Image (cartoon, rainbow, N blue to C red; front, side):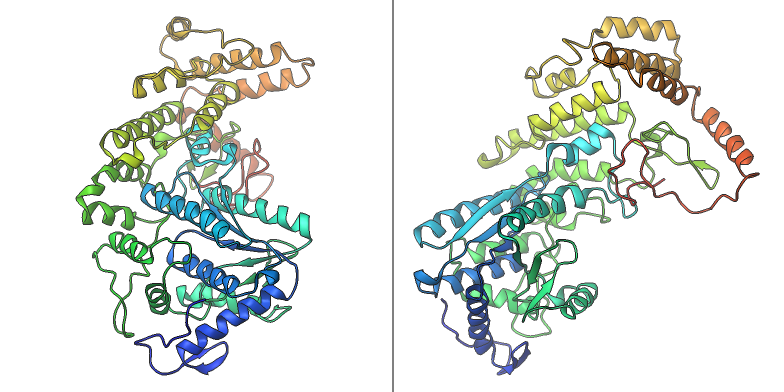
Length: 515
């Protein structure tokens, strides 16, 4: 346990949850509080660790508190969970991976009841399965499909497993009121429902409580604590400072000594594919601040390609279920087209090859997309979307120079090769809509051919014909306008932008569509 010395540069006293006391006394009382809460019951703890400054400090505080207890009092497990979205900034992902490895080794060597878990999203929920496979458009504020799948579901699944095994769990999080006004407001709201000292109810997960030990600290105080004490599992806090510094656009991350000095707390790491922000400032800064990070440039270029204001030309004018929806006289576009999805896959594999070629030794085997995801994407294309050309193996071989190690699909093979599809295109005489319609019907036929029961076969055929009955988008638009004019005679149509899910995917949340 670190000595409770005065934290320099913050004055003799400060307001804390324990009253007006010196920062050094605050640290001592905080460690004593952690020890007291830990010993109060047998409810296991789950620490959310991202590798950033806040979660690092929280994990270190719990570690120091446990190390200060007699071995016989370390009676329950503390789980440290880190969620890897599989599209994390590679520099940060490598940092977190090394930290987790060090944590496992140090916990075992120091005989601490700390277990480390790296969590990942299910393959069907991964970013690339959704975007390239299903064709989900890049995330936007009104179509934020990524956070739930990539971050929340993996961690919640683990927490629920702990609750199922022990009846309850305490989540230890590095959330702070100083992060934002919204965060402070949310934390204040949860405080009102506290059932035990310093433990707030979790509104999303039954039988779980939230403990936020550093909720009252400022950005500056977090950094000063990290810089004053060594990391207990041997991972350098100074290197963490350097990582934040490299991600700051102005290349500044000073050791703060007063309230007028800006900290680097604004440097924020996350998914390199994120289009929820106008630009990825941290990735851009990493490239600008260090020539050795130029290998990250293909990621930035691909991320910027995904983030375009108007991507209607890349998306089908129909929804995923084939329906047509109007908003202010325009069709609400659905998923990415086959051409766009194939292009995103090519770009991604190309970026992966470039990074492996140009990057440092530790990224020579970096996978931007896993083989499991590629298989899932191929299944979506061929089996679900009836794109029976089965182009993924060819794209993979062209971009990587390697044979795609995938099995044949659809009862021993798709049954059509490139020559067959060329003949079909020739028969359709350039009518793309007709070509796609016949192809989809062939896909339905092959799907039902080996089924034990053919229930739903005629419904599937009818739905496919209906989806592909338009010659082009203008034809579909005329039909939709005429249809809605007829409907207007029966009810008043709301002029609000549609936000509901496609009928074909009942698992989508109510915020997962946009025009």
